[in-house]
Figure 1 (cartoon, rainbow, N blue to C red):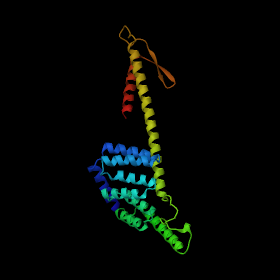
Figure 2 (cartoon, one colour):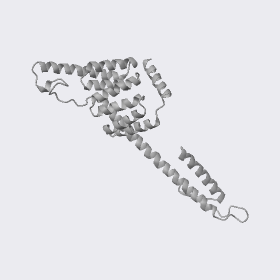
Figure 3 (spheres, helix red, strand yellow):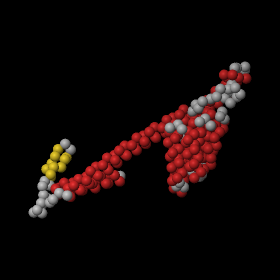
Figure 4 (cartoon, rainbow, N blue to C red):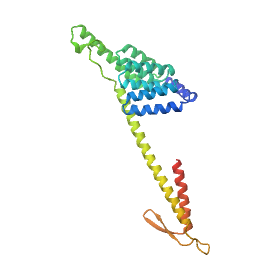
Length: 264
């Protein structure tokens, strides 16, 4: 039921707040940069989108995960909070904020953020897995702190302590999201090239048929009002003896079909 309410609210936003085309264009450029792991460039495009339409929560969400790609967790958290202010039902906003808080060692804050998200979508699997991860990391951090207080060396210092080694991004869900976005971009680019090639082929066929019709128009008709000489029309690897009228009728249909497919 909570999931249905979240979906309903999201649909209301999409109906009442239609995305700005200029802002959406900037977002798409940001998505391309993000898929290419050019996170700084992606941030620039998402920022431009926000300047055009500061009320669209998705732009803040996308910029948040781009900051995460650079390990800028404070900025990632700030954008995730702004995203949630604009749409308190946006599950990815909770996920991104909790991820940033977890990477900064703020495990209690991260757990609180996740629980807030689960109140919106009780059985969300992504948030449920993330909550387990936060608890595990908190336990490991507390164990490391205990070891440090007992005289452990620098390697046992808790995250964030002076002299402690810097933690790399450890959330496998972020890595998966990056990989998924890259795959989506690659598939979209391949589909675009396929459509472009088919369109070019249709345009060439249409032009060829139009030239053929033009050439046939210069040929004399029969003096008795007939079609004049017959001619051969190719059908696959075969040739069919056809009247001039039949050829023109066939070409007209081909040109019409090519025009329809070109529009499609």
